Length: 303
Ligand code: PSU
Ligand code: MN
Image 1 (spheres, rainbow, N blue to C red):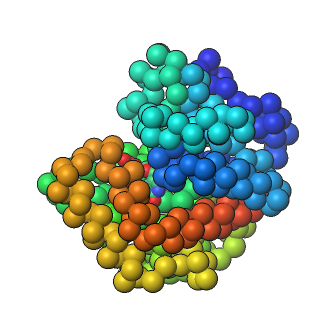
Image 2: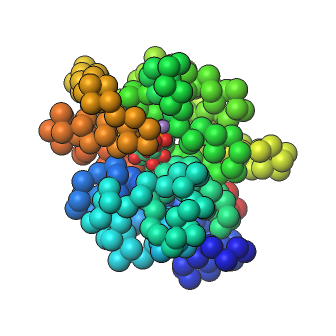
């Protein structure tokens, strides 16, 4: 094991004895939700994973250590400091670690650290993708490259419509990443269950998710698998309301010239403001829903 990696005793013991572990990211805590809902949600997600029979491993960079299994104090610290914590993607790890700084891990770096630790299933809310207008900006999330090369199953509620969903699917196809719909043929779009795009395969059980991922690993095919799990109907948002908020947020971001790593956190925050907190409530519910599926799937993988 490398000297930069710290695994909590609980996570370490679960991995050694072949018990199920689910990775969780920390950018969603520091950059994806306001305090204190971010910390409350992170703790609720951990509890949900326990309730469903797996061990949660919230991942972050803490004082330069790649940490799998943050303590409640560390989660509180990441949530309270919010956007003051560096949003850490793959390119940020070398300098953050050398300087012994903190970093909130995105889907990309959570996958990297999960794989280092031997964790195979990861639950989150949304992933990054190909941004609208990427033909000019070349803004394509590193999350897609990581899915292409790192062997972790990522369970999300689909890419948000702040992205170009069609281009995101094309990119994943090129990179050989299976896009699975859990109980659906249609790609869910985070706040809503519908996008108008089809997934590659529909899978209806955690057992079959585990079998497909296992087959990918055993064949030695590089990379992960993307599972898109639709937000429960009762929490999904009216498409017209959310689409208007997204369009307004995108227009404002354009006007302000926001680019690079700032754009995703900016849009998430703006959409939350524009929808008066309804989107935050939906966001929390879909993460809990993904945590349940991830715990069940991690258990199947351990059979
Ligand atoms: N999309 C969401 N919620 C999030 C993110 C994306 O709906 O919290 C976060 C995740 O951590 C994701 C990151 O990995 O933003 C992607 O950032 P970027 O677009 O800069 O790659
Ligand atoms: Mn980007």
